[in-house]
Image (cartoon, rainbow, N blue to C red):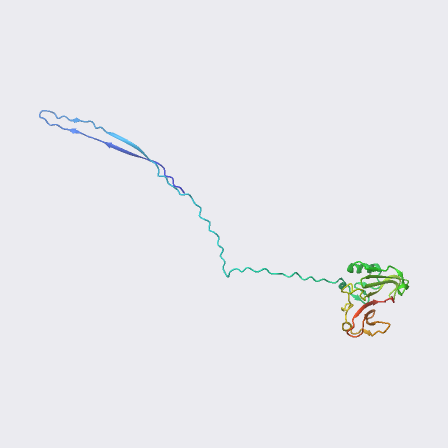
Length: 255
């Protein structure tokens, strides 16, 4: 803060007094006192004392200290970039959602009306790859008067108006899966509730179904196994090294 000093006038008074007294002595003469009037000269000198200029140094802001980062502990090590492997994507085969059962496929049971079954299976496997439409049962050597086959790859569902389940109305009465029409079975993932599918070995089949009955086959018929009542497996051979080539549920047709 700057201090301001108020100017002040210094008055110096100088008074000079000169008193001169002359005394004379003479007989019979009265003393005469001669007084020289006092002449006083007063000189007043007004001196203005200028205030001593106070020089206030310019205010200089203190330098801002540079922030210094102090690290306590071991020196920081820059991590090298790492390579993250992409997440593993597991694809679930659509067929794994449908179990091949002795009484149907998945939740579609034998004796159900055809349109309901076709709609249900299509919701899982997509649009059918083949549909014979309704044809004379004799053409397929099936019971009744009419029959229809709807397929999704190597899976075929059979509908008719007569079976060991009911007669006089159209209904679902059998399914056939395989043999493969291509290099691999389609749809992939279809198997029985115990995990047996096309390509399973006879040893695996026997382990899953200890009560299964095996047939060696001959020149006219292929080797096969009755897995349970209403479900069969066709084999390339009946030994443990043999494999399942096709599966059948329900009452099949001759063609």
